[in-house]
Amino acid sequence: MVAPAIPPEPIPEPSPELHRAIAVIQSLAVSQRTNPQELLGILRDLEALHRQICAEMLMPALPNTRHELFALLQNIEANGGWPYIYRVRLQELLQKLRPELP
Image (cartoon, rainbow, N blue to C red):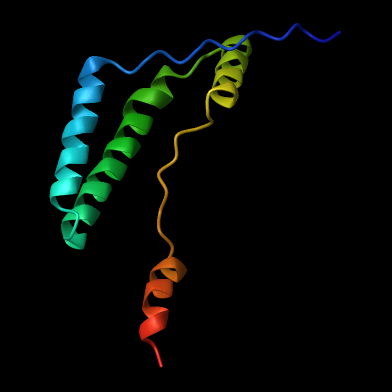
């Protein structure tokens, strides 16, 4: 017998504090739009924050029961998947150089 599906809980709207933090980071990135070193620094800091939140806060907060874990996985699937930090691959960077190569 299959257990009935549990409807996923909707993701709450981001808080005003998070909206302000995102706006500050976007503004900083825009102000550095022609400075690749600074932009890489911003991305590195965001990636480090992502890792810290995952390791120190998310992992300890994960459910302890199969029922709760299943509900969380349904929620993740229904609301956009696991958070991911995209990394540019070396091949993508080399594509920018191709027009200049003989």
